[in-house]
Length: 66
Image 1 (tube, one colour):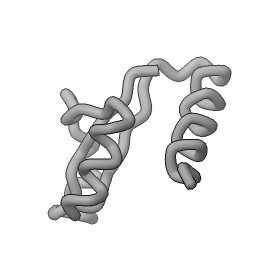
Image 2 (cartoon, rainbow, N blue to C red):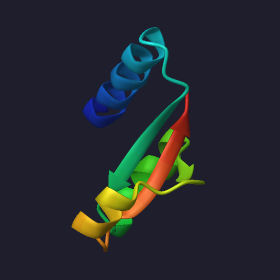
Image 3 (cartoon, rainbow, N blue to C red):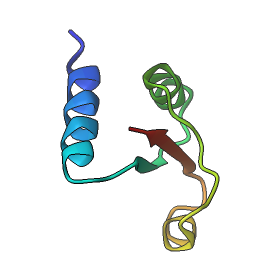
């Protein structure tokens, strides 16, 4: 149905209106989750949020440029 895509787009548009240049995503490491974020245009984060890494060491740290 595309609900995930719609939610992602709505979140990135909202963040852009608030002045954000990127979204930082601490994502579950499941193959399906990674495929979704890659399809949205996310890439591996250039800078990691160490607090997220320590709390969820198996998550993938991604970013999306708005």
